[in-house]
Amino acid sequence: AASVDQFKPQNPQNLANLANTAWAFATAGHSSPLLFDAVARASAASVDQFKPQNLANTAWAFATVGHKSPALFEALSRASAASIGQFKPQEQFKPQGLANTAWAFATVGHAPPALFEALTRASVVSIGQFKPQNLANTAWAFATIGHKSPALFEALTRASVASIGQFNPQNLANTAWAFALSNTAWAFATVGHASPALFEAVSRASVASIGQFNPQPQALANTATVGHKS
Image 1: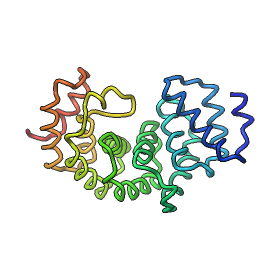
Image 2: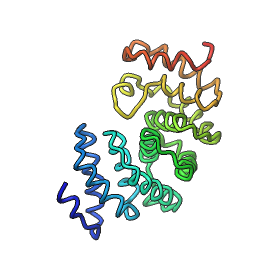
Image 3: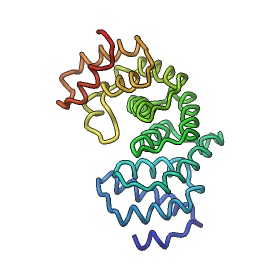
Image 4: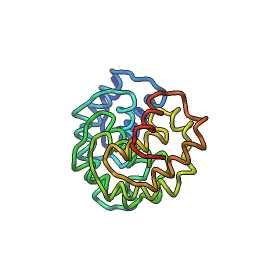
């Protein structure tokens, strides 16, 4: 933590090191308060120089370990929204970065409209490249914060129906940042976006893989309460 406090942002690699350090500790499940406080201070001071992957990884890491840092997330929000809107192909947020950013901000309960509008536009454009986990996380995030975006959910509907056979409930349920198919269905119902095709696809996939669902009451309850008659 002491060396992080002495961080100097002149070298771009140092910026990546900050994000990678937070990501590594979060991935390992080690939420050192002193370390994350130090990373938060250093990152907030230099966040405008972060590349998209650094922004997404930092937000994901802090949300994953549950380390609250309002000042950092405010800085990440401004920098991420600005970066998404720059339209530089070589420096764009990748689909996973978009989904992880949405998930992270929703998880910490910080939902700046400008950021989620930017995430909406970028996600709609690149929805065809989203993996099932990206789709589920994005739907969950937007539903959790109550950010309604008909265009995004239409795109999520088409992409989810097209790739529903690739959704693996066991894998999704066993990861800290993903949600099983039931959560995807719950997300669409929460924002009031009715899509019979999606719910039919989720219904078929859930029946086919019901034995793989972890025995978590909330997961099954979320699937059962979407108001879809199947």
